Length: 300
Image (cartoon, rainbow, N blue to C red):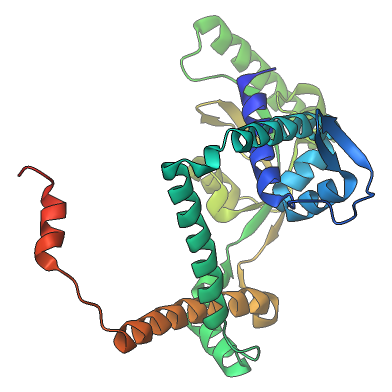
């Protein structure tokens, strides 16, 4: 197994540890993994899967074997944890201090989130409309092109024989395209060095296209074919299949994004205001002299 694969499994195992409940909800749940006295039940795995980020769930769904490998890694971490507890590792002063800091952090974050939670009816329609107008430029979708291409591979710095072979293939492609009734998709399927189905790229935003190709595409009519464009990876011949004009996403389309952003901003502002009020009600006394000595360091 490659190092990348091992890292992927280890990462998933860490996420699973974070998402896994401390014990099964149903004591009689089916055991799906066991090592020694350590069990993992179906209920626990289900809860774990629901707690994973969507990207990680998709990775496990696409590769069932990965779930088995990840569960083995998880069992190993469970065994390690049990061994550490048996040796009272959690009672070591530095470990206990780290656990307490983590506990305090979770409590503080959760509590502050609760006291800073915006009202359920925030934001209102006026807030959303104002935010939309203030950020309208960010909702602009550039012109889009539906493209197909024929690609002739020729890496930068290729030797002369490779250049000659690529040029010969390019000439053959251009000759085929100039034939009466030539079908770009058929030529792409037969001669392109790219795996795209019949040369189809799909819709591409104007700002996502290399300038050298964009300059060619911008002047093409629908179904027009560009001149060959040389880039670092080889030759590109592009066909313009369709165009979508630039437009601004309507407020209805971005409403959910605006609501989420406004609530995040309000929560952050309310959290800062709550902390300020807390300090105002409980004035802090700071020994600046002692603090400065800590910054300088001992013995200086």
